[in-house]
Amino acid sequence: MTVASMPHVVVVDDEVDITVLLASYLSKHGLRVSQCHTGRALLDLMVTDAADLVLLDLGLAGEDGLAIATQLRTRWKCGLVFLTGRSDAIDKVVGLEIGADDYVTKPFELRELVARIKAVLRRIAPRAADHPVDPPARPRLHFAGWVLDPDARSLTDSAGTQVTLTSGEFDLLLAFVRSPGRVLSRDYLLEQTRGRESGPFDRTIDVQVGRLRRKLEAVPEDPQIIKSVRGAGYILIPAIDTRL
Image (cartoon, rainbow, N blue to C red; front, top):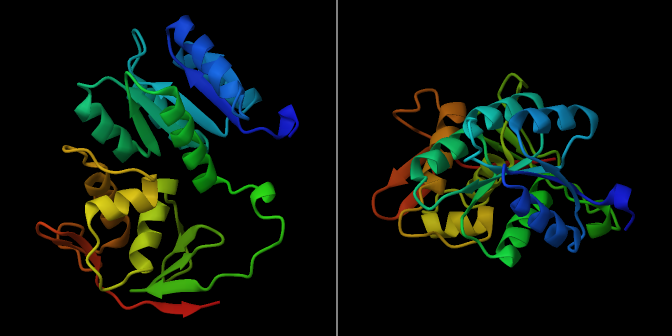
């Protein structure tokens, strides 16, 4: 793999020692790494050398990490993983609502961080090296007036208008439409979409379901497509029609 073909990861942290450490470690795992120490530096770099994934510390000194993430999500399509402190539960929830693909809590294991980054990269941009032969087209999934296309990773409404989903939202919806009428636990959904088990206070799936409802449901407060099953998880109600 040439340097130019390596996934580009930008590490954003105001502590230079941390960015140097992460850049050194990630570079040894097939990633091209840039370092930024302010939100402004990140946004400037995205214009000239856009990242495939941004690893963003929410605790940048004197800056609002969530505001930086919002600007990033508004202007670019890239993976977004947050670094957060153990006590930043609110920031984690808000970050997921903004559209973060994952978050890692400090202190963290470097091997876990690499695994999380590569999992997000696989979800957002499957690479040709992983698929040397073009796979057969998968059928589009029709439900309640919506069309989910697994190959194009797109969702369109009955009028053919495409609705923007984050990679996490798309993977979650795909898990639902693959198992219509079946109650899916939060642990199962987290494993399918994030490749990990939930913690005791992990609200990742609840936040993502809430975001999906706001995009799918006519009345999000009275959902008819994705319903909650108390104490068990969530269930997709409509039948699925598969067509190419």
